[in-house]
Length: 381
Image (cartoon, rainbow, N blue to C red; front, side):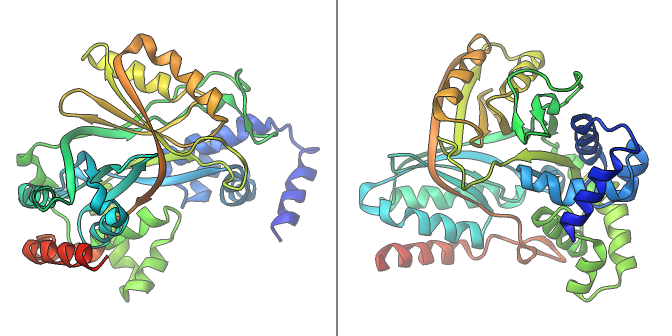
């Protein structure tokens, strides 16, 4: 069926003039604003036939490696965000992955990545503001118990996605080009700034809102009707919560377009973090850094700006290793110092509705019980 639709689109090219590269770029730009769920709206905004939009967005673009991700404003949900580094002791390095997976499934740890050839991990945690200090004490306990040899956490002041320009992607060939394929376009990064504590009360959410956010974060194209059926609620109720709470209050910061090439292809290096100190603290320097970092052939997928001004940039492989490292030289004029940390493995965890109740974000379990469970896991390995 999908093949028939694609062939139909190809036949219609004889009836209307089609600039394939521009058409795909227009669809992706519209998705960044409206999301992937409303195909009819995207068709009206771009002037591209609805069926063409549907086939390109839901079938052709994913095959090329493009992914649409809902971006949640965790700050407006009353959560903090910390970027951290953990060095496990040699004695406990064999249980590091299991411990971090357990924390990701049970608590507010949302990401970990292991630095290649080291017992070191980069992590991102998002504990509620009221439990922030207590939650981070868990890692202090792990250090005192000898599980961690060393560690640090830094508060994230802003985070986001660069939204790379599509002018360098040849949609006919399904590959990135070193020279522009289409006309220049304005691609602005999606940035989420920290919210002051007194503002949090403006963004009060309830369990329905969290359920919607959790489902859309897992699949940005899922329909509200399907979420309602899963929760046993009326679609009108969830539509109200989505429009009046989640969207109007800015809980959905927007949509990012990620690019993840075919994992079966030989793409050289694995996922990589670049930790840099910008040459200046002015916003213009940061904006220039993010824009340059997201230009092909090295495409930055996301970034975190830490409290000391350091910027952590996350890359997904799109080219052989030699080209990737050479491309980072273009950042040299924008940074004072930096470190490239290739990963050997990693894992990402979304929020779960079990962490939220009518009273708000739950204390991350019984913290004493968490510590006991961690101790049991370590001793059982």
